[in-house]
Length: 176
Image (tube, rainbow, N blue to C red; front, side):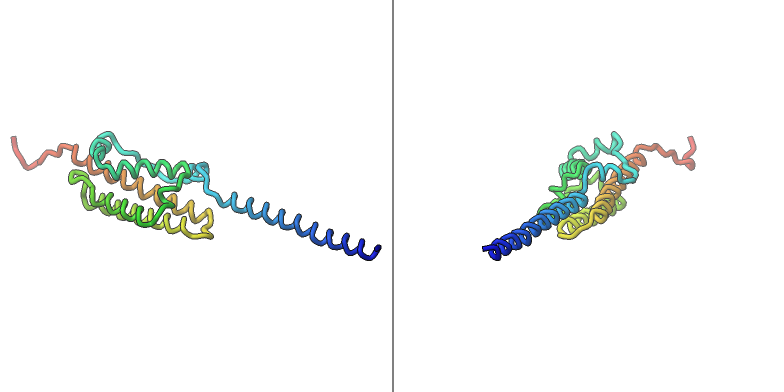
């Protein structure tokens, strides 16, 4: 009887200790996972120059529907809502293709088209990073920053185009 009692106590100690260890491992895994989550605060702390569209530029792109959607998605990205950038690959590629295809003629130009391609590349890179099961927080933040910088550079280029077009340049060779 005493021998069976010792076996039962030994059995309980072995399995009782193991369950505590498993619970601790689960808690540590959860804490590690939480520390790898990118938050809106993390994105807000990224250092880059954020150019906004000038009034002339905003007016020029107001009817460019895909661009307006992109602006909204960039704002969601800044708030750590990654649903658009983490979605299906096919939808994202189709959106980016339509974005470039639907560019208004009065906005289009070599420099703007190049900035659109750069932004598309950065968005696809971010999308790929989200699809990696072991992506590190630092890598995700780096790619988010690249998307934000590419978007900002696109805004700057659009602003430059409309600023240049609004300038009245007199030809000095023409005499009055």
